[in-house]
Each structure stands twice: as C-alpha cells, then as structure tokens.
Image (tube, rainbow, N blue to C red; front, side, top):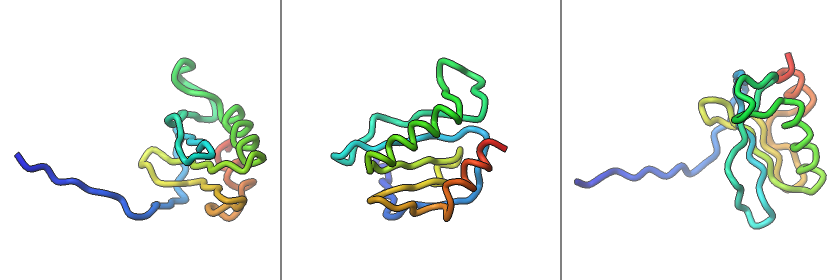
Length: 101
C-alpha cells in the first residue's frame, strides 16, 4: 500500500483563541520537548498548566531570546516570537488579555 506524505511548507497563523492552547518553547538548537497544554483555569491538573504559569514561561523564554509558539486547538499559530521579535499577533498584551478574558 502506497501512503501519501504531506509536508507543511509554511506556518499557518490565526487570531482564533480557543480555551485550550498549546505552548512550545524551542531550545537554542531549534528543537522542543513537546507542547504544554494550558488554559485560563486548568481542567486536568495532571495534563495542563494555568495560563498564568504559561505566561511566566513565555516571558522567561523571550528574555532568553528563544523561539516561542502557541497554537490553538486547530494547530494554527496564535502567538509566535522568534529572533527577538513578535511575529504574530501584533501585541503580546492584547493576546494575553484575550487568553485571560
């Protein structure tokens, strides 16, 4: 049986923030250890962290100039920081305000 292989050639961005988000923090070598699920108030404490905890991890990663990606439930990027710049969305403050709303 010959299976099809698909490779995504570009990152897909969205402004749709859903309750459950996934945080990826990249190591300097470009690798990450998997995503961490988070939401404003975790429903499953053994599988998720709070949005407040996630924000602290993001702030620390940005200070360390590491790439940060946050995806929504559809795996679209809703937050992307790389090479010292916020790529998406336009404002980190408005992003977090929406997460905490």
